[in-house]
Structure formats: structure tokens, C-alpha cells
Length: 288
Image 1 (cartoon, rainbow, N blue to C red):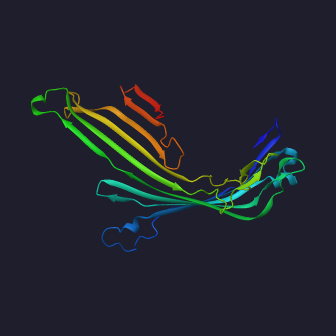
Image 2 (image 1 turned 30 degrees about the vertical axis):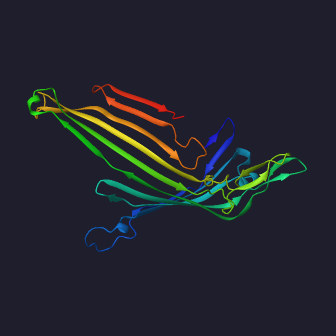
Image 3 (image 1 turned 90 degrees about the vertical axis):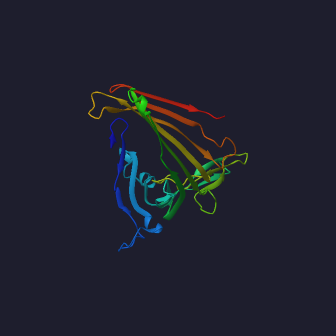
């Protein structure tokens, strides 16, 4: 793409992607009886490669532009399984592994003579950066129904059906800014001796793993309400009317936060008033 006013050119070449659809590596070739727990483990694979350059028209093939070129290869392997607990609770453990291949890094250093941080020339080579996370989610569906008594069969309202779908998930990821990984570095940032943290790989195509350990629980409660009413226009004598399409509350809890571990609570309501008129309400509650 080219901007004729600013004379800026952005080029991406080549871009390559490769995908393997979901498969079950531990599934038996000849099935006998029900699936065993490990046969429900599924995984897939995807990879992509990109090479991009941004420069002025006159500098598109200059040494400086080639030095600032962004490229890399990223691999992603999600692993998941699905189980049923006590016949009513769906349990889904999951894990994800991501690996990036980079071919240069750009380091920074404090210069005592100039009194500022300077960016050094790129160092070319093969750099492997990886990160992973794991989690588990649980969900179920609860139904409640109220039926009008026989002696009130002539009432307009015949029945109510209430559906509740609670779900909770837990996720964990280690701190990849830890020095043992080598993804981040600490350098002096000013004349007072203060320091700053940066990553020499941040200027590549797919960035770097986030800093800080993560351990959080996310919860969601969704419910709907439906009624059956008498109707002479319906061949069955009754019709279904949705009172609440979806009433949802969701939030999260960060176990590693220093304070205010509970997030704000998001509440939304969606309802159909008529065939052409709908109602949407949304609010956020701050527990603090």
C-alpha cells in the first residue's frame, strides 16, 4: 500500500499460513465400547510467517529500511478435552502453547557520556521465544418450570420456563518477564540511576509474551425466561412468548492482585417487546 501524500509505502511479502484442523492423537483406531478419558483430548496446530517493511518511497530498498524490517514465524498449539462430571457438569480443561521464531534483536544501553538511553544496531541470529498457559472451565444448565393448575386452565398464562446457565473458568500463566527466560532486560534510564525494563524482541512481528504472573477466575451467569400463553391463532392452542431473552452478569477475580481482586461486574438485559421492537440494557457495577 502507498500513500501518495506522505510518500509512505507499506509492504508485506511474503505472508504464509499453515493450519491443521482439530484431531484426537490418543484415539484408538478400532473403537470398543465408550471413549476413554484420554481419547477425548484434542489438539490442533497453526503456523504463520510474515515479513513487513515500512519506509518512504526513496528509502524502500535502503540499508536502513532493511534494518527496520519486521519478520518472524509463530506456531500455536491449543490442547483441549471435554468431560462430563456427575452427568450434569461439563468440564473443559485446556492448555495453549505458543512459540515465536525471530531472526534479530535490538538491544538498548545507557550512555554515560550523552546521559541517555541509546538503541544499538540489530543482532542477527535465531531466537526462539515461547509461552504457555493452562486453564479449566465448568458449566451446566438448570431448568425450572411452573405449570398452571388444572382448575386455572382457562387463564391466559399457562406455564413459565426459567433457564439458568452458570459457568466458571480458571486460567494460569507464569511470569515470562522473569530473567531466566531472557525475554526482558533491565537498564538504567536516567542520570538518577532509575531503571526501566524493555524487551529486545518487541520490534518483531508477533511481539513478546506479557510480563507478570496471571491467575484469575472468570464467572458468568446467564438466564432466560419464557412463557406459554393461550392463543386461538395457534393450532396447538398455546404459543411461546419470550419475556427475557438473556439476563447476564459476569466478572472476574484476580488471585494475585495486591488489592481490589474482584473486577467490576457487567450486567446486561436483552428482551423482545414486539416483533419489531427490542430492549437492550447494560450497566457496570463497581464493588469498591
